[in-house]
Length: 168
Image (cartoon, rainbow, N blue to C red):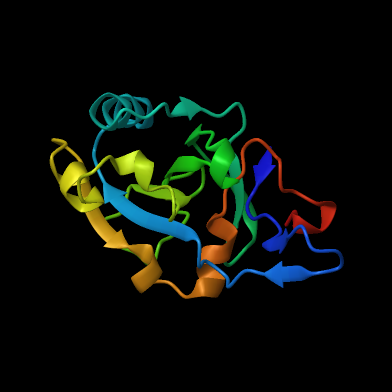
């Protein structure tokens, strides 16, 4: 099973120089409301936004408070090799509860590298999303959650950025 965050350190071409990115700075995170099942929503987003979301072989595992029970959440993703992080759609409803219960009315979490503007074409992302029947933008979670709370939402289903110390 796949576990949350990746190491946010970025190594540049300069010897011994390490830049730590500001937590959450390059990650866009939106909460979506939709009564559609995950595979139907992924297909609808693919069709309307020219994306290529596919079901991950592994769910996201998350320890839910207060007991720390592990819940599984469905994950759909599109590899964005040029950006280092994928476009991800994660169900907010897992096998044992909600991934982010503090944000009411949210059924899905959509994450992508903020600089990956090609995902949206030339239109405003909010307008593109609003044009899809059955899908509503609940919130830009960057304005609702702290950077520390956003950090674990750096889903990496391909495991490119995981170190043993990143697993929780």
